[in-house]
Length: 143
Length: 192
Image (cartoon, rainbow over all chains, first blue to last red; front, side):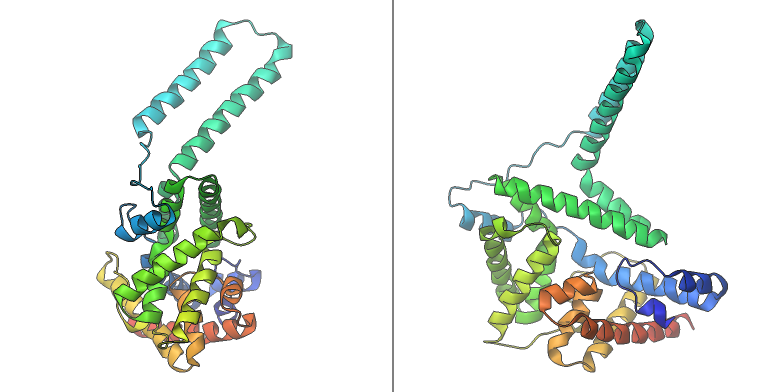
């Protein structure tokens, strides 16, 4: 157990410790409780403050006296993301099945479509990054 | 195992998010800096409360730290996490100010931070963790108390605490190890 207590945050548990935990119920329980307690202790400081916080506004005014207020960007709604994704997939199907594509272009078109899907996914993840951070945090608590 | 993986993913997502916001700020986007402040204000405020023990001074401290961060943002090269870089500025600012004033007040000594909604069991567990950190702090020279807070409350790993405070990493490790032993004992008592 001491070996486990020496570990840093996010450090991989060594094989011998994992092996021991597999067979020792008490240590397994202790590890679970320790992880949960540490998580609970650090949780409150991870909550973001609202952008309308007066301190934030004061700082922005000090940095830029001409600052007139935070303009919150209108996030793209989930509905629009879904419609966009469905349209993209539909377009791909229509494109592939409505034309007689030569074998030489197969790979090129597949790569273009793959690029579109990757770009869409990256854009989706980045514009909803806070949601993903919170989700990972919740998963960490439940694991 | 899954926890370490999730921690790694979370860390990398936060790193990417912050580095994107830093780049936007450097291009002149004030909203991006506002977002950075929104993500990190709680920690800086909590550190300020530990050093200055009152809202007004902690608030001034937050402003001071973020203005310094904004002024020196171009010097942030991304070699460490933005949060580590910011905490280093905050810690140095606080140490310089506190040398002229009062001693450090550990986070566990007072309800500095607003607690989140949690079940009675979770509340009990959080209290045990706080007690453990406080007990471990009693055995330490005062200047090391901040290391335990950084590890347990600010969720900062050993090497980053070393970078922020300048204390040797082995000293930090051994103090945290002792605190973890106390925590384990306290949690055992709860389960019994």
